[in-house]
Image 1 (cartoon, chains in turn brown, orange, green, yellow):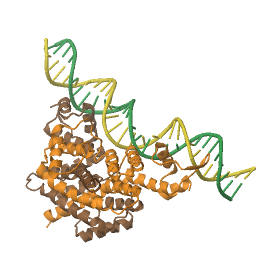
Image 2 (spheres, protein in one colour):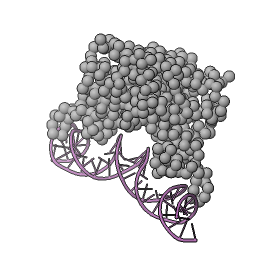
Image 3 (spheres, chains in turn orange, cyan, yellow, brown):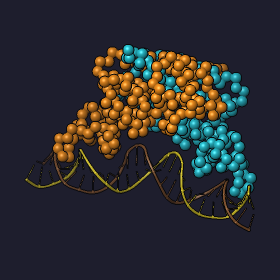
Length: 208
Length: 208
DNA sequence: GACTATTGGATACCTCTACTCTCCAATATA
DNA sequence: TATATTGGAGAGTAGAGGTATCCAATAGTC
């Protein structure tokens, strides 16, 4: 198919598709002539992936490119892929600058040890957690190990559910993409579930 | 204190503080003269709150203002506050436009019914969940009720932990602020925990 | 084969956000 | 009195994420 059909089928304007091509988010089509290129279903799929990451999840174009690059480069090693790709996808807002303050970092390390988790020292999630704990403390809501532990146990069980869904996939590329989708795209869904559960729990406690 | 001290103590530049004042994120100080105003610890606290919401959580200035407004207006009703405020805080990226497609919305409704949750019909989290499910389906990863249920049960237990932390707070303003912090600011922390748990679980399964 | 529409490619432009800079008169401080 | 600081307002800036325009080459249509 050509670019206009790609546009029609994906709902993304031609100019935006050209923009994604320029930015390297979408691989170029197969050139059939000097001013003609051919796109296929993989391009369509990739385009949907881009829109899901930037739209639903709110990733920046740069972060999306890094994730997609990691996907094509490390498709054979899901474990490595997740490490590389998820480094590009900040959990919250901006990436934290500089080395984390030692106070909360040590706290995170203690938590990981208590949980007996095997987590890389440079995992970005450590810094995110430490920074969040620091902010909460500065706002007068210190979360100690004791409070955090049950949350971590629930996260553990969530991760088991996640990994279960990757079983039985033979194609490594497919498994890698599914891993990404489950990790990154499921986040808004899980947060939405939490909010609904909060509303329900709040109603149970505060309403007659 | 005056603006320069507020700046020094918060780490936010004077010009940025002025910007927040202009945008209505920060209430004006007590005027002591035509070109002099006095700020107090509440301003400092509010400033830290603003930086946490925009920085750690990545909220836009507009969304932050809505959240803070809801906080001061509905401090007496935590249940209502969460409903109002969390509407302004999108879970993922952009707010979804228009009415959700009926397919996934019906799926979400079925899930809520199955869970016997009490969730408002217009809760934004419903739309977020529906949209995410739609994206995942378009990408070839349909999540059915059966897959989603265990995630929802874990969310339920997370919500219990959240609400437990609001018990025993007498000051309604304090309770309201804590509710916001726990809901909004804890999200990056929970996602970071999930990623670390995934790395751990992945290592347990794939590494010798 | 002529004619019109579409295409790929490049460049310039636009809008929005979140600041940041500059200026000013009034005031605090030495 | 001299110098620095302040509050306030408006203009300016940088980056993100597109959008619009132009161009020559080509595809489809008659």
